[in-house]
Length: 70
Image 1 (spheres, rainbow, N blue to C red):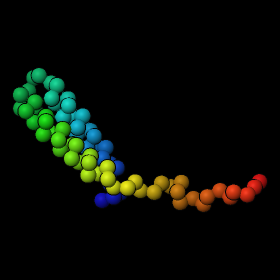
Image 2 (spheres, rainbow, N blue to C red; image 1 turned 180 degrees about the vertical axis):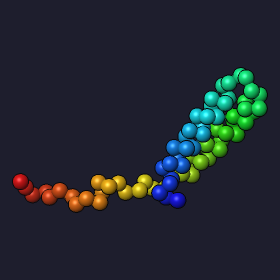
Image 3 (tube, rainbow, N blue to C red; image 1 turned 90 degrees about the vertical axis):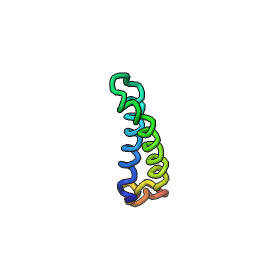
Image 4 (cartoon, helix red, strand yellow; image 1 turned 90 degrees about the horizontal axis):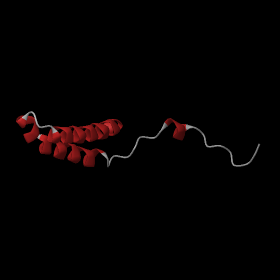
């Protein structure tokens, strides 16, 4: 789950943006009616998945440079 948290966080942001687009379009009433629910679901997902710590990067696995010299 933690390995997919960043992807799910980005998906939640995309869901919020989709909800905003759904809210602003005037053509389909059904899409407009579910726009606020879509924004709220994206917000809840973002709040959940943003709390997971980031996985360590590949640079963190490398040995630190020596402090001493040339």
